[in-house]
Image (cartoon, rainbow, N blue to C red; front, top):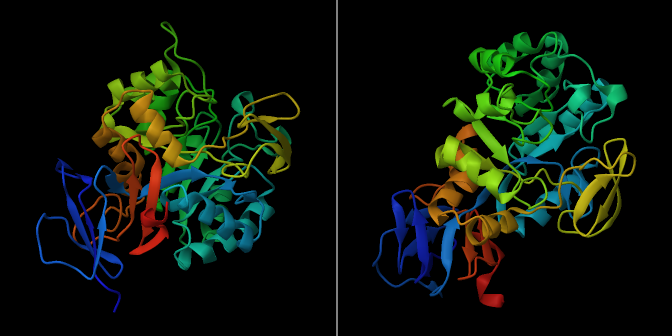
Length: 384
């Protein structure tokens, strides 16, 4: 059996609040205790002056470390997953982009095997059932209306590992597709949409529960035409994704979302592409070429933002130090809420006895210093 590990002295963020001079006891792959005190262990790590928070959970991620989830091999996907683990993301959903349906089905089959092995937490289909008016970094020639029969083909191709699909629900077949997804336990997400306020409300009533990267790839909020942003923010049934990289959102927009949705309905995501954790240069996002300069990814043709190079440790640090959000609220948005959406909150998303020992160690400036996944150090805080 693996020796008991005790992480002591840190500020530990628990579901009930932050505990100063806290203590997390890990036995094997699970958290055994989060109460202070207890007997000395064979392996005690002094984390005085640090924070211990739950491992991060990313619902929307296309790759990293120079490797793609959208068109890469299984080895590529594992490389990207490892890159994000080094930045605190202990659970990741692999996101596909718009492509030919046969290609997407083949990619889903490969990703499903990795999900069954526990390497990823499932598959997110972002496209092809999205609006050409709000296509962003998607190939317009491959877009199509959300035919429920084709939606079902992708669900089936994922062999029970489809977790979310982004749709422009105002398109023909959109509402029926939302109902189909809900019936199969797949999150229907409103995104890359040109919907009105009223159309978005109908999608929510049909079963849509997530807003894909709120504010981006949808009509702006207007005082006479409130559009999808208002509908998604005001409905208690919807969780809104936010990309907190300083490029996709102004800090005021992020604070607006937190104010109206509340910390219980926000999920930080990366929407990362290959360059995350890797560097500037030329990349492919699906069939489209992307130029990354100064950490910002844009299409070579047209200049549209093409995903991000964000990692969730940077999103966490920015949320506290730039946006001024309480640490406990950030933990909910980056761990607990996405775990709940995925139906995995009995195992991950918070530091509680019996859950997987997935956690992140941050210093006083919220710089990542350690990552543990299922009881093993991915980044050992004692080495740096």
